[in-house]
Image (tube, rainbow over the protein chains, first blue to last red):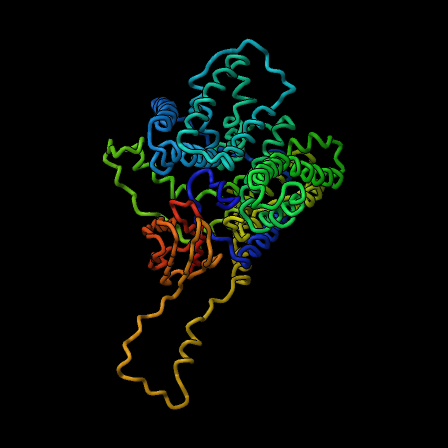
Length: 439
Length: 146
């Protein structure tokens, strides 16, 4: 058994090959060159726009559709819990793994990125738990509870080795937690500050292509939350790469050998240390990003000679990093929607994995669906570059709003450009790394 | 949309296209040397007529030996190109099952008898090759796209 072999992916297999070097160079070069096209666009603007033109299209779902979606969402949660408890333990044959990890976690993210926060009205926990609570939520806690839950969620995803049964237990526990949370502080504050899916999808909806919300990032804890969206996906990509694995096996493990004995002698101790080390890296990652972000925002502040506080600027610019975060997420996981997400069609007919065929779809889409690696590479790089352009554009619009005149806004954007190139290149670098199967 | 914004979108696309054309590696002409080597200049060696015709060579072949649930011999990385024929041969000291993910190919392994999976690499990507019963990951088969 290999050390890394213990940590299977949360669920679903990713068949992507590392992006070839020339394409990685192309992505970085295109991001840089196109950033200047965006800058040129703003510099040559005839008048300074005081507010971004509103090109939002708002959707109003018909009442019957909203009701159906809400009923479906609660039923899906119930079915996910039931199939894990009473169905097969094979993760690929049980409905709940595909429904939760692929359809809900990934699918809902991409829907929110397109249409805005579609999750809030169909949030099953919100439908199930109502109430005003008995205690006033201490405002100074901010979004830290949601961030803590988000970190726990990513930890479970990466290291939890989740099986259908444990997923059921986790979903049941989370449902109970929601009921208690709403009972104590009330639905309004619970779903605003603590329920992390609500916070996550609200942030994604903030930068949606259509139906953009005017939700503001008003707390530093929410900035850290947004940065964790970047750093956790970066970490997930990084931890499989050869340099990261070598860092532990060649540098850290030999340093520990005098304490614990060699890898073979002290496997349990070394393994416990390895999990601890990975957890530490995951928890620290958003704060490393926060430090880097603060440095670049301070540079932007001095470039624009702004009187606004560093804190205010950090809050105002944080959402402009979300397209890069979203591009990270999509490039890493979108192939799962094609390879595993479509399997929800046969699984609906046989949710417990007992050979049922409720809707006659149990035999559909049996053949493996594997997207061509060459196409995947090009899509990955194109999405990263697009996310980068969107971030640069949003940041420039925000700078015009904050600093008033065009010259100061442009000057402030030069350090910001550096920050975004840095984050984008990190994303590309991870995609281009060779992948290590185990130690 | 304002015409000025459209112009900049066109400019961006042109910049992206020029960079792409510039950085893209030329397609490799692999078959060319093979043709040259098949035209001998000297007198050809006569081939004995009785020799049976050998089976066509396998493009990519990977042999593994597994002992006590660990890899005793075999390559760390398996590389092939889309369209190649791939052969994965495993000899294990315990009965097991060989599985190539993605392609979803299985073959049972008897103790100390080589088991072989032979297939055409029609899909590009990175596919784990595992022994199911012992849970051993033999490695990943990396198939580069054409």
